[in-house]
Image 1 (spheres, helix red, strand yellow):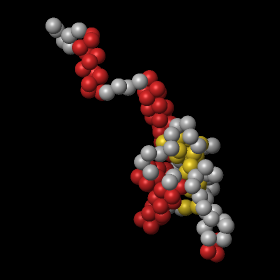
Image 2 (image 1 turned 90 degrees about the horizontal axis):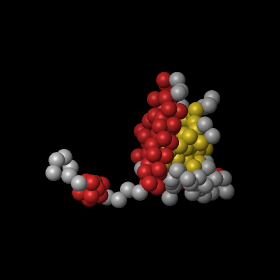
Image 3 (image 1 turned 135 degrees about the vertical axis):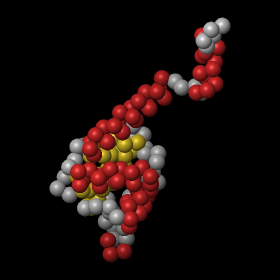
Length: 144
């Protein structure tokens, strides 16, 4: 036999090496990859100072909740549990940079002096270590 041999042997080898990949899995991965690229392109479209901060915010969000799937949502970088579920966390750059939670995120009243108010949006000008830790906490709580 030359090369890989008969087609059934090649198929068996591929199956053993890669496991079973069905068309649905390949479609989901392709959609996730496309959505990720759209988010990265959206971030890259900003001026350099904002771009740097938004790229870091993207990294912080995904580090806090690695299973989230990014996609562009109403012009913002949005993050959901899958490509077909509602966005939970988003950030955007308009006049200010904003981190926000949607009504589908796990939110609860703040209590204390804030009473029944539910914190769900924050403006930011940049990211420092304390802000990154707080963002990570917010993302983990929102996606719990």
